[in-house]
Structures are given as structure tokens and as C-alpha cells.
Image 1 (tube, rainbow, N blue to C red):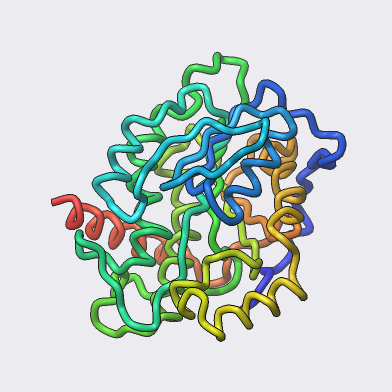
Image 2: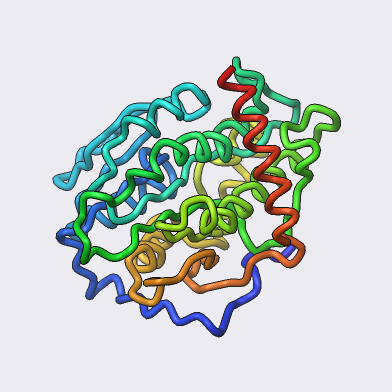
Length: 297
């Protein structure tokens, strides 16, 4: 498994350095933007002048650039589907999906029968997109650039998952279950160009960063959790540094008329996972559609 993916040297993002970037007039929606990396991206974009909307459970911003807040429980497929239908995105330029957790050591299931990591970190994104994608950016006028969707996960790391056990119902290990969400998110990026051809889709692989994502697996506040957080904080970039690298990519001119490009945590383009073939992508999307319908039934 390649932590940062394999560099794609044929793609030039032409991203404007954050110190020169002016986002006035740009509209960004961060789903999962009230915590962790989503929050850092939302704050960075707002500081640069963007009109920002964040979606999550609780907003704790006290800055002068406080974003618009939409409350939603993204572990619920019913709630995610409602959000997809109702969230105002007709004037949005970019949508980022950053909500996520890490699968627990013992299998957890939502009230809708979905493994908790799968529900929060992947299937809710598909549920939101089904209602959101047809409307995204449609009110911006004919001269507007193609609207963009960024899906955070770990694309390009060769995590191929198991679409035949997408919901981790037959064999459960926390790491294996999380690899299903990783692979499904990459498949979603690669399938997006066919499902919603009027949009451009991109994957983001931030790599390990000190956030709360491991709390569900290691036990929030446990000695193991605190130790892991300390080590990651010492050797990896902070959420704020990540945001200074990624926010320019969200609006990079080099991504105009491009789709299915993967981005690592340094804001560099990478290749999709070898083995994530069109056939495997279709297997994941078919399994995802079935699982989502079951949750909504």
C-alpha cells in the first residue's frame, strides 16, 4: 500500500500559491466541514474571500469569516438523501466531501443496518450526490467553468477492498472494513465522469494527519490514541498546512476540463490505484446502489 500514491508527472495543476490566491466570488461547499481537515479547508478558503458553506453536526467557529452552516447527521442515509435534495448548490463552484471516521475494532452498525465507517465515510456521500449532482452549479451562467467535486479518502494507495462484502457483514476487521470505504470512494471518483458527465470529479488523499479520525478505532482519549496522535503530529503536516496546499488545488486552472485526477496531501497529482479497473469500479457502484437502496427502504 503506497501511502502517498504514485506521482502523475503528466498533469500540471497550475495552482496559484496560497499567498497570491484571491477567492472572492468563488463558492465552496464542504460536507464534513465542521471538524478536522474539512474545517481547516473551509477556514482557509473563507480567509481568502470565498463564500463558504459547511455541513456537519456542530459549528464552533468564532472567526470573522464564519461560514454558512447547515446541520446534518451524515451517518444516516435518510438524512444524507434529504441533504442532497435540499442543500442549495446551484451557485456553487466546488463541493468537497471530507466527512469520515475509521472503522472500529469491533463492528458497529447504524440504525439503518450499515457498518458505521461505510455509512459516514462513503455511502452518505453517494446518497448526497444523487440529489445534489444534477443541480450543482446550474445557476452560474453559460460562461462558468465546470463545477468540481472532490472526494477525500486515500485514492492511489492500491486499497482495492471487497465489493462482494461492501458492508463488512461476512468477515470483519476494522482495517479491512476501512479499506472498503477507501476503495469505494476511489471508485466513486472514477465513476463520476460517467454518472454525472456535466461535473468534474477528483480524489484527495491527505495521508495521516493529526485529527480525530482515529478515535473510533483506537478509543477516544485512550493511551494508544493519545500516543498515535502525538507521533502523527510530530512527523506529519498539520491540518492548517494541509489546507494551504489543498485549497489552491480546489480552484487550480490546470484542472479545467479534467476529471478523475487524484491529489495527494502535498497538493500533487497522483495516479489512480493499479487494479481499480472499470470492471471493479462498476462492481463497487453496483454494490453501493444496492446497499443504499436497502438502507433507504
